[in-house]
Image 1: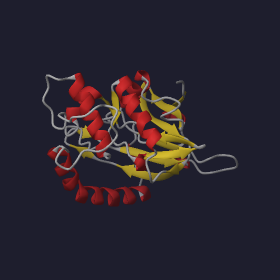
Image 2 (image 1 turned 135 degrees about the vertical axis):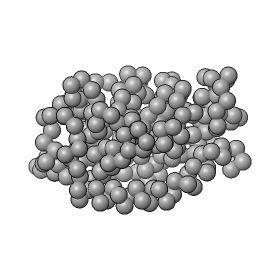
Image 3 (image 1 turned 180 degrees about the vertical axis):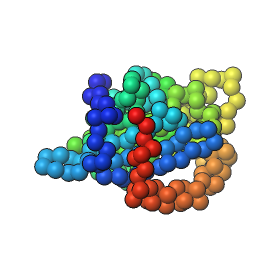
Image 4 (image 1 turned 90 degrees about the vertical axis):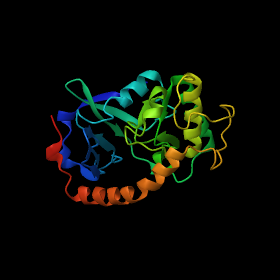
Length: 239
């Protein structure tokens, strides 16, 4: 899967429209990222640009997923280009599309298959993290991807699964790949082909409690993001 490579220095950020700005550090982890949209002109579809600094906690994740084959023409047809600066991945460009509200069952099976085949998973995978682009479904937030070996460290990265059924599937993959390790959520029963979700008693307590605790944090985060769109702090983007 080949993509255009564009240089961060060649992107006129001042001409882009700020959409979602997050300037945030958690301890020593940089979670800051900038999302911009190109103004629609003529035949332009208003592509989206996601940019981060070299200290971003998920900086290299997308490159590993592309190399492994998790991202391809079927899972990310909207991915248009990768952004680099001095050889380091600094973001990507997505073509415009329509956000989904319901998760397509066939696409869900495709993502599960990619996880099994490549050993990567998308922690934020859910209906609202997919979109329809040119009548094809595409994943969003592409840097939210990790090797299966990192499953037990999601709390370290301050990441929470958005889809419990998919989390169950990833936990099963982790348990099969690392049977000697004892990690929360890794003791699910059932075949990898099952798409049904676990009961409340089957779901790992750490995940359920984590989602409850994250509700007020997410509300505050949404407010901070809205404020950030009026003051995008592009001066903090490093070159």
